[in-house]
Length: 568
Image (tube, rainbow, N blue to C red; front, side, top):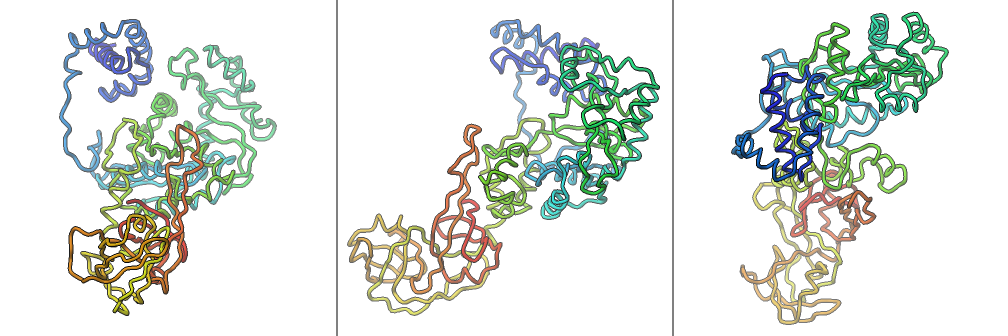
């Protein structure tokens, strides 16, 4: 291996160790060295043992010595590079205008979430950037977890996001091709059929021991392969890649390529029972679909070696694989293993519960697609872990919805408020302070409700302004407040509060989503429900309307008597 590469690995290992109390890890160095020298992706099998050796050496050095060596031999790594202002995504390597093909390959095993949104938007943006095309492909080769409901939900989610794709297909429609490639693998000796139990396979992989099945001849493997379609039961036989059981990369220790699943497929029913796993199917599909740049999250990075090995052995065209960090929000995990039990146990109302990171929940909460797109692109294309605060997305959303959100008055914990000398019967109020969104007429009879929070601070003699109405002086405090009009002039120093007319106030409840998980534990108080009163004009708004309740925040109308709090 080139001395320059070894030097680069050592420098990266020392830097990483010095940032983590003197200890570094193989996986941290693998991603960084490939980022430094992308051409090493196809030589990762040779690189991993060297990384492992250098990591072991660095971890035995005391932290002060690590820092000293770093400063003496690798000063360039300590230079903080100024951040460059850049909008959108960085250029792609080996990309030709008009020839870039990307793909978005979700498995239809759940509802789409913010992580899917990031992947789909990146795929689409790169296709647009180079005048290429985007393939929307369902990776549907695990019938145990897949349902037609999820195919539909993912498509609805993508359409809501505004993602434009050029082709829709299912991996399961190419099963005959996948079988042909599997047989080619077995015939060439690159794969074998294993009948060991799960525990034995796991033990052998941990101990780097070759499976006895790997020594079977071709006739045995062909016979077992044919038996997988009728004779063997699930988990009694699998097709395994003939990799390297001594590889430092565990993904290469004879991984599974195909297995038996007897659950009916949502589309093909009982037509197939031998199904490829992700590694085998995605490599073949990317190649035959003409994908030039295949993006996936960085947890698959160690599987790149297997991806390329499969295509090399099949003599198929190889796309370029690039990784990016997963996206999820702090306290709002996207894992299906976490979300499904919440729904099944009734801890949330469904996949559109506004506390969740699903696209249905985002839509219902009042987050608009353009805000998600701008948010994703602001993160750019990076492998850095992205555990973003939800407030970052909120800030993008606020800028978009503010110009089109009607302003209404709303009060919580209402307190009666009477103006004794009221002389008005109605008032016209602008629906938006800057934009021409028309006016609404509010009937006035001198009896109002104000917020309990505001009422607590009022005492006899105080002067306040009822927004859009007039200035009043408090003449009676307590459970029911009374006041008298003083004048209508603008007085900047007196408090200004919102109100709701008592005669036709509309009762609503406000659903307020909060952090779903605290310290990895479900937050039982993650949904607050407040009772409130608002103006009668609320009833004229369509479900889905975004409202800014004055001095309260943005909410989306969810029904005739319910709104969901979007954000401040």
